[in-house]
Image (tube, rainbow, N blue to C red):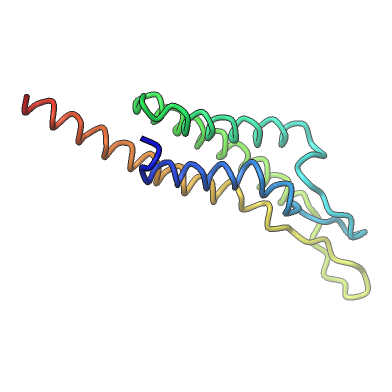
Length: 140
């Protein structure tokens, strides 16, 4: 059933990894040039994989176990993406000279965290549904 709460959570995760990276930059360098995820092949692959897994999880609502496994894989992909962001963040210069333009970290760097939170909530709801179905099967 598409009207379950995990569908809404997965839809929010889909938006966070499929739509919002085009809107919010990951960071801007000292020249003021904004850096989006499409400038790096690894970011494209990880955001694309996460978006695809979210969409597949929404579509496969009849197979709760597969949906749960896809959610876990999606969390792993987002953790890898977050690790790459943290690595890049630590290598990104953070000047404090008031005469120079300071490089800024963008809001796009927290998108994997948003996705992880909502996929975790979806997996919790999927597990709850699976436990409910198992308990009803025991009564028969």
